[in-house]
Amino acid sequence: MGTRLFSAFAVLLIIFALALATEGCSSGKSSRDKAPFYSTGTGTGTGTGTGTGTGSGVGIELVCVYDPALGAQTSHKEHFAGIVEESSGNIWTGTKNQIYISKATIKDGTSGDVIICNLDAYKVDHPTLGSVYGYCIGSTMYVGGDCLTLTFQHELGHAKMDLPDHYGYTMICIMNAEGGGIYMGDRNYCEGGTFDCWGAVVAKFGISASGATGACPATEVIIQ
Image (cartoon, rainbow, N blue to C red; front, side, top):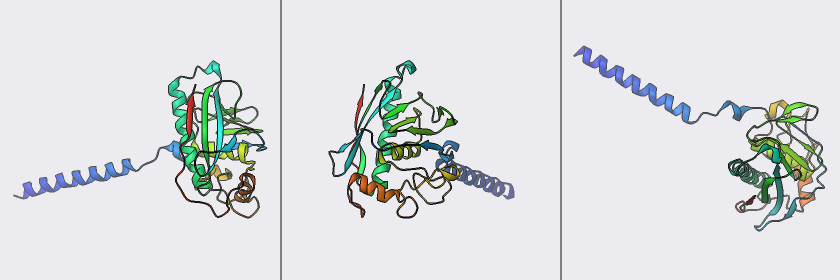
């Protein structure tokens, strides 16, 4: 009798341990999710790529190009389209339901709003700084084919919103890549203070400082 009770108890302990292990794995994040999001930008915000969206917000149109030498396949372009669409939703939330990516044309080419520097990496080679998560020159973004959506939103802030980096500061803002990106997670645009990114976005796009309501309109994706 004692042996049977011990065996039953041991089985219950094993089942309980397996249940805990399964729960832990289902909610875990990969190390890539916790990677720093270092990037640089000198955006002027004067490039092409803005226009009125089909929804109730202001749409930004982007042409995203792969160097033909990379040999990007349709699957690569579809994957990048997913990054653009997810980033659009984050921008919509960060701008209080008012700005989104209304159209993204993804194709081979040598010039565009977004230069996709490789097929499936999330880091790129900067001309002088080595390996970085992304960068911006003027109104053009340079990112990897598997770039992080935080990086995409940050670089778009340089290229299309004329927002600066916030290195050396601790405010919560998508433009603050200080500390390995620990201040970027809310995907918001800081209000007031030294930079007042939100005030700059409101002024540039003519949107409401108090925000609006409604779901993010869909992004029209064209793959060529």
